[in-house]
Length: 337
Image (tube, rainbow, N blue to C red):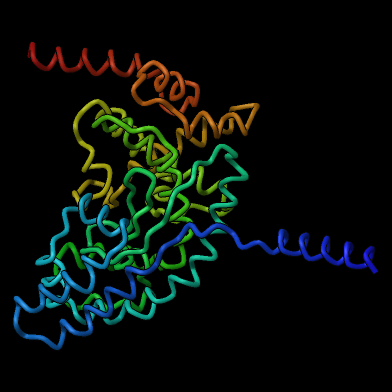
């Protein structure tokens, strides 16, 4: 009898260990809080009461992730109320998608485990689903991934009829990619950022930082990048040539995160540059696991280390040093002229 009881206890313990739930990396409470506030604000005409509602029901009840994304993007209570009043059709069309965040959370946890398999040194971080004011679909601060669900969870059915001009055109193009279908990849990308070292305000380093995160997340998920600019630029060599001419100048927003016009008619082309450097470096490395580690842990405060990695990728037409010398020579000749 004792022997049978002993065996039963072992079976129960093993079963408990096997069925132990995964650590929760994803927080979705801000989504429910936003819609609670939204449903009351659209019924209220008094602007001061609207601000009070967004404050009490969304901002003050918000997660640490909401606090962080508001700080990073400089969102305010009045801006939230303005967005709700100006774009009610847009927001209403998004609601059902954002409420899928709890289900998507399970997929995200799986994605993080895939990333851990690729990079065993992965440090813990949290993913927060928030609703922002249309400035980012995803960003990071410290060890937190901050998702702007109003962009990240849209799809081709999202109503953009209330928008105008370039904003409407950008949203139309972006939403045509069905962002919600790529949300796991987006989150893994942002999770990689929580593992990377900080970067200086520098165009070349910034595109490399973003490109490495995209490349590593694509490798982890074993799917193609959903960033349209990457596929576009692979078929357009003029993109790399132009970047080589501009890489040492403060032109970050011409290459990333903005609708700044260019001759290619495609935004965010900097992702292609950084992605291609990371991809080339990885492909030429005999030790793939080490290459991933080197890409993620690159020290951007050490220009020599960064230049060595870029040069080893053989992506550019010349070494960084030679490109820099050529740029200085061109600048000198221009001044003399």
